[in-house]
Image 1 (tube, one colour):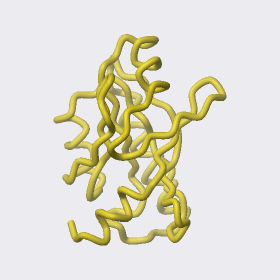
Image 2: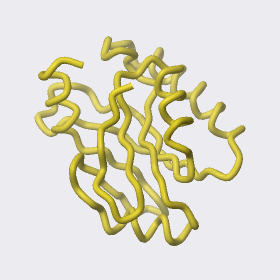
Image 3: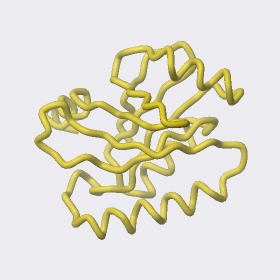
Image 4: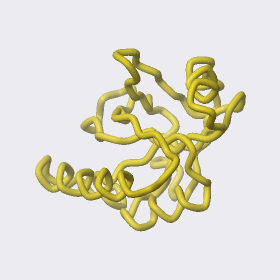
Length: 137
């Protein structure tokens, strides 16, 4: 991944909603709300993934909605995980928000496989009481 794209990913807010509460993840930072959510659901890991804009190639809204619907259907079949809707938005708002999912309880290997299946450059990975990291897939 080139430096500019990496910088853009690091300059993004990754947010999701649980019970009308928004939780925002930032690369390199811990998040107490995420930690409490892990404790609530008995999970220790979270993966923030989208199916939008594969390989950072901008698609139409309809194409992105279709891709994310496929991802949602896929996630519904995965047992013992919890999914929450959200979006990733760069802080400079140079790129449209990307509808995404926070998935609790997924293994890192499965998260990477999903990101690759949906042709993503990276995913956000976070573990209980750890800082969020960007994983280049």
